Image (cartoon, rainbow, N blue to C red; front, top):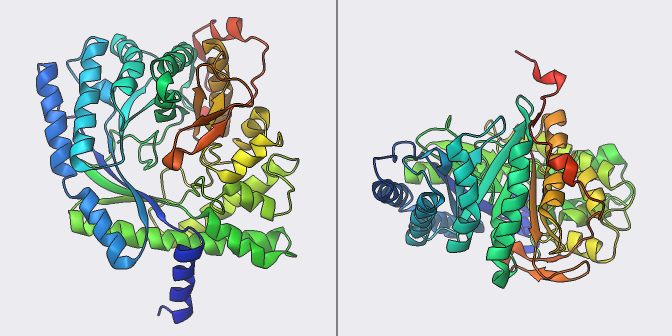
Amino acid sequence: MIKTSEILATIKMIQQENLDIRTITMGISLLDCSSESVEETSRRIYEKVTSKAERLVETGEAISKEFGIPIINKRISVTPVSMLSPANKKEDFVEYAKALEKAALKTGVNFIGGYSALVQKGFTEKDKIFLESIPYALKETTRVCSSVNVGSTKAGINMDAVYEVGKLIKKTAELTKENGAIGCAKFVAFCNAVEDNPFMAGAFHGVSEPECVINVGVSGPGVVKHELEKHKDGDFMEIAEAIKKTAFKITRMGQLVANEASSRLGVPFGIVDLSLAPTPEVGDSVAYILEEMGLEKCGTHGTTAALALLNDAVKKGGVMASSSVGGLSGAFIPVSEDAGMINAAKCGALSLDKLEAMTCVCSVGLDMIAIPGNTSAETISAIIADEAAIGMINQKTTAVRLIPAPGTKEGDFVEFGGLLGYAPVMKVNENKSDIFVKRGGRIPAPIHSLKN
């Protein structure tokens, strides 16, 4: 039986501690949209997405109003567009991106993800053309998000793809420089990408997923911080228990919303992603949780250990609340989207190297980080390779979302607005990695990939 105290506690979380459902994401398969012409495939993409997601936004808003639970975003993810026929030049793929953009505007969703390719073991000729199209697709659209999976624990790291991705990030920054290189904020390079991720910019609908599915991403770093304020003198076992219990409550709310949305839309429920996704709002910060544990500033010595505890406790609490936990699930550390991370970077406590160390134990990787505009494509590729190696060796998802905003230098700021926030431009190691990156080929999968 639900107690009155539990209801009041949840209301407090929502009203005072920034608890919300970060996103309801509908995954839609486009595998049946390929045809004999680009025009017909584009038409099928638009019609399928708009018909499947016709009531997604209104349903999310109705659930939010009835239950009093903020639902911040309604999104769509689709099958990786690189798989669709008959595109054979980059302009063809851009037409598919425009069809997705048109469908996003029609349905009213915030973002649509899946302009993606999976090239962890190698390229097809079509994949190469698709990667060339990404900067142009991101320039021509405002709601389309893109990703490329360049490595995995089973396949190793496709260094040819890593090099190409570094170049396409630079091209995207140049093409969207009038808007703070916003196109780069809609692109992610992955290692070990998952098929049921509801969060942008990396969401895509995996080929092993159902025809259509509902995935929900919860949030609530502010709730966790407020809970830890009650344990000022607690040891780490006490802190871990407090985070687990809080994550349980947050995930139960996500499960409720997911089941309700699934029932009303007549679409199977997929997963709840229980990631702590911060915002630029003061108090809604993963960095502040780490500082609540006793760190003067996020980024100082002890930060990685604190983040490891947080990430693990969140997962343990979440899996007790739902049998369908999936996606990425844990703690995100995007610099521009986290007020505490922004402050730590501004004062010099948080560096790119420290962020890389933290990604060994967090949910994803180097996320929403602005770097100097003159950073070379080769250096960007080398950063991606480092992050992919962490994911490959540790059998976890890692990702890179970098913004080399043209004309910016260390200490400047790049404004994105909304949930994307703003980012201080961080220092990048100036020693070159060009020869390393240009070797090409594939970094072999680690020995522990030989499991069967």
